[in-house]
Image 1: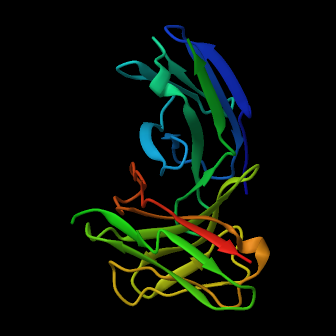
Image 2: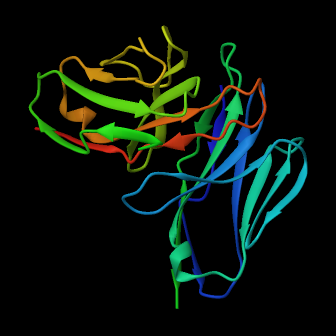
Length: 112
Length: 115
């Protein structure tokens, strides 16, 4: 089994930088995903980490430390459209198949 | 149209009725998933399927039934709907790349209200 923890809500100012943390405990870790979900819409893929370190993709970066069971999503130059829920999902091996399990999500509010 | 679709998008039903939510994907992805999303709980896995005719329970399977006779379809049935099953249901699919990155692609969701 696994336990995934993210802050429930964060607020930030347009143009600023925000870091959304995710901690997890798993029995067979095989990758961590970040998804973005705007209100009333489906989640969409943002990033994937399986090895330790930082993955950068434009304004978004994601970091992973497997030994610490820790990841963060870094959003730079925040825009109003970044207001959304950010979901951390960890792939585990509960019964022979790698199945992602999601945290409860972090609701990010960007204000002017 | 290519992608992953769900139907209906909105459904109102009554307690005790049977309801089937449809999910269809055109990518021939091996894996398909059903999640429900509720405030305070995030996305919770109901059932998943690794291939046609192979299904497994997720975190919250009680009260739900699935089947996968064809790779592209993965219907979810609520055999006797209860008010606690009022939720937003998301279907997702992903490839089977032998343990490598398997991004999930989500359908638009079905909003179900059980009265």
